[in-house]
Image (cartoon, rainbow, N blue to C red; front, side, top):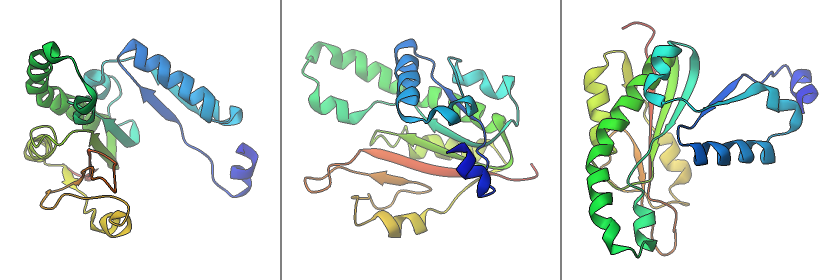
Length: 193
């Protein structure tokens, strides 16, 4: 595969996959080993860093960043039967926006000027989606939201998209389209602050 890419004048970049939780990091490594061709694996690194410090450790190092943020994972609530865990999960849910803002802030610091960032969650929570994004846009003068209307026109037949979501897409599950919930927003770092 590497030789085919080089023949086309395309050389893969380097990919850093970071996961802080040890079990999820192990799943990540196993997934990469299962699906990435051997000749491309040397372009992929994994780390177990706290994502809140990556921007400080690697400022302006990346052209593209994906923040698949820890979230309240509303879909898992549908299948949870342990009522005693409800109070704990609600307390965790209230703390998540602060963590998400810290992770996004760090990701922005690690992003090169002109680079793009995708923020995603698997929750319907406005506090974890739109409110987090609004806080980031208020905090960083060099970050702009990317218009996703072109994507909407291409995926609206596959997914049920919530109306009125500013700066992002919210996929809501329905009986005929059971994907989600999933929130996705794209940001761009300007060349000057």
